[in-house]
Amino acid sequence: MNVYQKLGIVGGSLSFAVVSQCFSVQAATLTQTYTVDLGSQPLNSNTNVVLPKFNSLLGTLLRAYVTVKSTVNNSVSITPLTGDFMGTAAINASIAVNIPLLKVDPNLTLSVLASPPETRIASGGTGSVSGSASGTVSKSYDLPQFLSALTGCDGDTFTAGVATTGLTQILGSPARGSFGGKVVANTTVSAIYEYEPVPEPMTAVGTFVAAGMGLWWKRKAAKKV
Image (cartoon, rainbow, N blue to C red):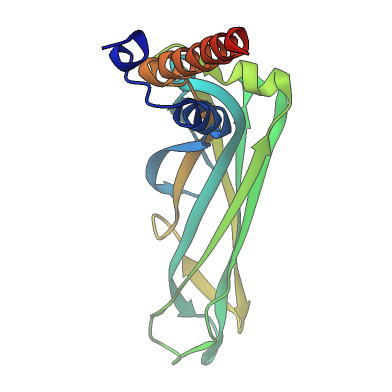
């Protein structure tokens, strides 16, 4: 058995084909998503959400997104003041997210308008007006300073402040409304990371070995000529 057979090389064409395949492989782009559900937040309130940074051991961060989704729910008790009530109770809400780490204030703001259909409530009684509206807003970050700030070690986090503000208006005949605890925003905040993963050790070693074998085979072939 000669040295080529021991190395498992049958012919030059096989060696060159392996090298070509190794160098044509392109790094894939992967995505990680982390979502925190804040649940029901009353209007005109503030809270914080903690999200993980991108783990640098996984690869190179290419782009980051922060996404806010919210559904504003409206249930208002209404008592007519004079005669029958014909109208609605509209809510104009705003959910602003501030990430101090990125030094942009606010980072993104979502506006949601909930305007239920008109409702008739008879004089002398009490009824309710209910409705909801949803919205989503997202912002991407790809500048080096942002990607660097959002990258860390496993377990590193960053904090985002979420301010939920809004105004409820009774539109229609004069009436008295009860809003306490009946107008809320159900909000989620997500951090999404697009990154190029670190090559697996065996893939990297295999690429270099194949390249080395190809060069060695070429030199051997050249010496025979």
